[in-house]
Amino acid sequence: DQQLVETDPVSFQTFTRNAGSSQSYGFELEGRYAMDNGLSIFGALGYLKTEIDSLPAGTCNAPNTTCAGNEFPEAPDFTAAIGGSYTHPEGFFASADVNYTGSYFTNGDISNTPSREIDGYFLVNASIGYEVENFRGQLFVQNLFDNDYLTSVNAARTSASVGDSQTIGASLTVDF
Image (cartoon, rainbow, N blue to C red; front, side, top):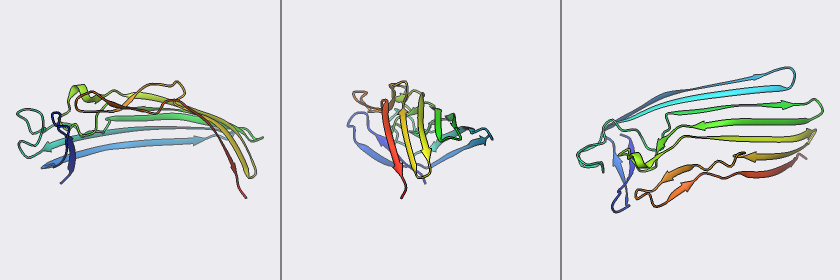
């Protein structure tokens, strides 16, 4: 049987519960196409359906329920990505991608508390660089637009984990 982590909203203790039964199904499609002119594009789409069929009575923190029919925590219904890259014959390159993560219930919330649902979010990343023989230099930006987004919320809604802010960096790779 599946084990689910639950956080008690009163004591904030974490418990591991054995699900009487649960199910998950979904799909992920991914495609990539490289053209002769140095352009490459890709896309991905994922769908996930999760459901707790049953938990032993009294193990769900929602009053008068066993959490039957609820979603698994940290399991977004939809994910998607699209992007592309271009490589010039002289060694210059550029790439960008957009990623989407759908809404989901925070870690430990098998009760599917509406106030603990994490909103879906988009992130954009980009890079430019130069590559020749055994040398590769790159400038990159993760979370290009510096979007603020949450990744989890505690049971009392007094603290949360925030996703990574904008990161700007450079990398240099030399193969010997």
